[in-house]
Image 1 (tube, rainbow, N blue to C red):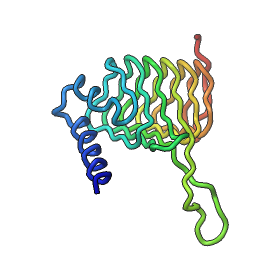
Image 2 (image 1 turned 90 degrees about the horizontal axis):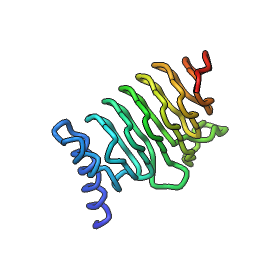
Image 3 (image 1 turned 30 degrees about the vertical axis):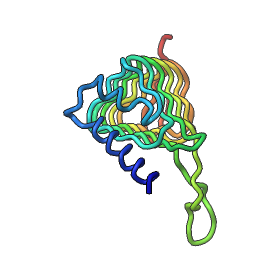
Amino acid sequence: MKKYIGRVLGRFLVNFAMSRFTPPLFRNILLNNRIGKVSRTAEICSDTYFTGKRIVIGERVFINKFCKFFSHTKTGSDIIIGDDVAIAMGVTLTTHTHQISSGKRRAERKTVFRPIVIGDGCWIGANVTILPGVTIGRGTVVGAGSVVVKDLDANSVYVGNPARKIRQLEG
C-alpha cells in the first residue's frame, strides 16, 4: 500500500509540475529526480507528458507543448537529450516496443526497451515520432511529421515516414 501511495503521489507531482500554473524554474526542480535529470536552464512548456525515471534533459533545451516522453524505470529505456535541442509541439518519443511473434497475438506480451539519444543542437519538428533504439546525430533537423525508425547522421536534414536524408548541413 505504501508503494502504491508513493507512485500516486509521484504521478501527482509530475502532473502538477506540467500544469500551466507552475512557474518554469519550479517545474524543472519538481521534475528533477522524478523523471530523471532535468537541467535548470531547460524550458519545458506545460501540457507535456512524462513516464518513467530515465530521462535526461540537457542545458538550454526547449520542449514545446503536448510532447510525450515514454520511458520506464528499467535499464535500456533511457531518453537522453543533449544541450541546445529544440523540440516542437506534439513530438512523441517512446523507448518501448514488442517483438513480432507467431500465432494469434503478433505483439508478444514481453516488452523490449531500447534507448533514444538526441545529440546537441538538434531541432525536432512538430509531430515527429521517434521510435526505440534511435540515435540522432549532433546538429540534425527532423522535419515536421516525420517518423524516425533508425539512427540519423549528424548535421543533416531528414523528412518523411520513415525519415530519410534530404540534405547535408555544414557543421
